[in-house]
Length: 221
DNA sequence: GCGACAG
DNA sequence: ATCTTGTCGC
Image 1 (spheres, rainbow, N blue to C red):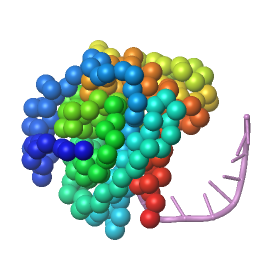
Image 2: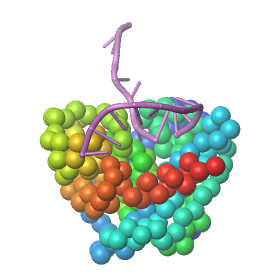
Image 3: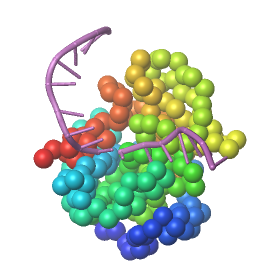
Image 4: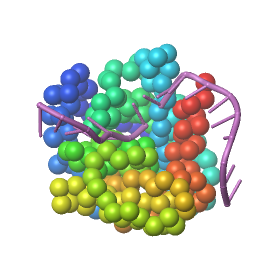
């Protein structure tokens, strides 16, 4: 797929904050995509050579049967460090490279990280969605910000994630008796819809099949 | 000022 | 993220 030009990449946290604050107005948390969804994609990162090289993997799966349709891989020098709240600046450049190689444009992308459940409401899922104009959902393995009540052990249980009196996402149990995941709107996908798709993409394991496939590729040598 | 802190 | 073996439990 073709990717239009975007903003320049920052070299400092100050510049990154400016970009996030400027992009946050472009975030859309309402459902704005056509159904039925035929393809869902997962993105994941890996690093080589002491972290100096970033490796991005994209996996496109059919929906709802979740069969692998296509996968791509891309490498590029790592230019931004990992700083909580600024993950997208470290990972998106390589992700865009991998997405450019994709033939089947996915209807929704499930990102490894937060959506609006972010200090400035611009987690990696929102950032990526805005840049490529594809609906995204944030599915993180751990908490960045927010608080929530305890939730039942059964799959499907959920609790709102609250930050500054605002619901920014949900803690969702995708598998009974297993640690939950943190779901939030990325771009053009509402929270209820995001939860629905995450559950439909996790028929067997804690993490979505999309990210599991991408993860396997991003980790392979 | 003191903690917390996606991958 | 990454470094790393075995081990507990369904």
